Length: 164
Image 1 (spheres, rainbow, N blue to C red):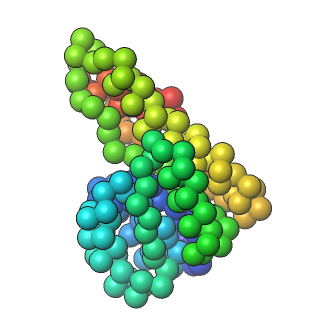
Image 2: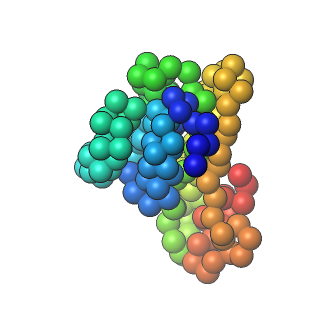
């Protein structure tokens, strides 16, 4: 199916495995230029190696980035633009925060979850917005089924993904 994504520049965060990896793969199959990212270099290299044959590596690149770090996010967007040009599509996807019941969580756990899930998405959108306005781009915020039906033990994920 031609989704008219050929040569569109796509940034997919947390894309070394799981939903982010599958999303990046689909965009590559549709001919998009895709930047993948993860905080784990080894996982990122494995993902790159698996995805590379789809485009012979020409439309795929990767950057190690901690999505809770402002400087890493700035670097990620700068490297995406440098490699591929203006960004057309941003897919905000993150791994999950700590799993625990309310009673087992501390203030730092709430702060960490906010930084990972919500603040990172806000920063990425803010920094990508000039490109997205020019390219009439799209923002996709990946959430979870737990936003409709909260899951036990995932109060941090349930709370912050609902805020998307």
